[in-house]
Image 1: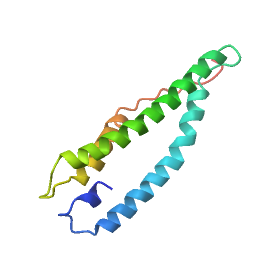
Image 2 (image 1 turned 90 degrees about the horizontal axis):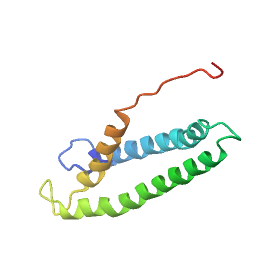
Image 3 (image 1 turned 135 degrees about the vertical axis):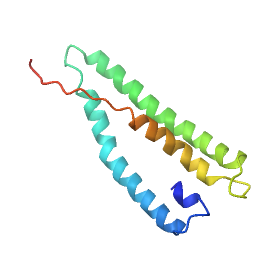
Length: 117
């Protein structure tokens, strides 16, 4: 989506937008159900039932907070910054969240532990 908003690109913006929407749909469909299940699997029931309840409350709060901040911040970035000779900067509106996602995914370190040991 970010690349499709840059007017100087030689490839059609429709192509970039279609590829971006496809990648968003695959990523959302692949990760959204797994994250909640993976997080919930970290607790031992019934001992940590209250912690599990807190986890899901905080988890869904941060998901909704991120969506709310994105709805507010993206139009502000698009409107208040000019780029490529235009009064608006759609590339920044799409690129800033993309850069934050790259930073978030670039620092993954998972430790695999076997159960029962």
